[in-house]
Image (cartoon, rainbow over all chains, first blue to last red; front, top):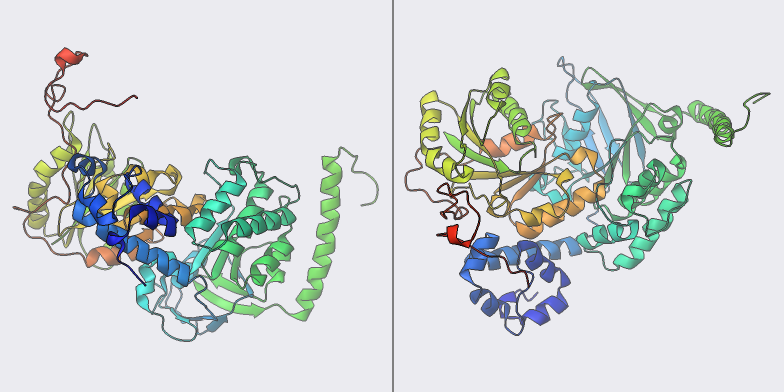
Length: 333
Length: 228
């Protein structure tokens, strides 16, 4: 790989590496004159201008090289494969040993249940931190069965856990299409247009009501926002684990949403006390007093009940729709 | 003693992050003191002391906060040394976005929040560009996509910093940030040390108290806009 950017003509550099132009724009040097090599262009930059934007000349090229190397790395490790995440038990708040070994694999949905303050967040933090017996719970985390490279702890671009929660909102002033495209470009995917179209389609298939690509993300309904977030995390986030904090009932096909994440080989961890969601998982971790008190696999009997709960849910949905349409809720439902 | 400079735009969550991190450090037996730099008033000393974190406040009043900070940081370090802290944190708000409080060979942290929008990293100067650690706050209320784009935008202006998410409300990430801070370089004296970048320049007639508007009253370091 030729990294001698300083000797490249500026226009050639920007043509071959569109994100290079973005770098200079971000630094505050968007109007660089073309027709010179990068090295000469930087050497000729006005001292006053450098003072204004707040960067030193010698540091500019170094920062640029680091940035380009980082982006190159991002492009090459599009799918750093995580085949399994293993959590080895530590202890609860009172020091009682947890005594478990839990292996999480792509495509699996694991639910997390327990009262507030029972240690659910700390469990997820242990995974994110790649705890090696050095967190308050004493748990250890293995990736693909081995102790991971701990440099990864502070490598934000390789974050293990992506999050979806009810408290999250879109705050960016962009249309749905522009927004996803921006995310795709920052992830260095090869075909941002194609992935953007895929994500918008998926989101629309999850949301009850359709939205168009030009709808501003801040104008999406609660269900549409959640659908777009889920489709985006499934297809674009680099993190192999997705943490979901409850999926509300508001106009979204929750079953399909989970299937989508599982199909994209995500390891799904979901904090929920919704009976249908909880039973959709392969297993549940039951938290008490800061520790995992027990692990329960979803049994065939529970699965049978799931079918029953889904029927109940469908009936309630019918009532809800009837209410929405202004009907009288009388008679035999 | 280790010295950490923490800077960031107003209301980005600096005090909350320092509180949570200091609590995590103190739990590990590391004593922490805080110097709070502010402009007009600050109740943060009380906030710190209520948590058992010794603190002092410096108010810059009508002086440039950056210039005030750098004229006082040496005495602050002495206070920290005399108090016998393991770690001293200076907290200052980057009020003009061109603030440049970081010192060479002293661990530099910039706090910036997800809610401020994805354009923000481009609007902040040396305070962000020259930080060793960038702490992102308020990540729990924006989408995953926005968090990832935000990180990317920070990377564009600071390719080498460690970027870490800390939640100022729950403290999640504070333990992890604490680990980074306790490995910062020890500093016994700031005599002769260099700022990482020059501070925003001043010294025009308005610095000296001029209040009248008009070309006749402008002297010294004056710069004009190009309006095309």
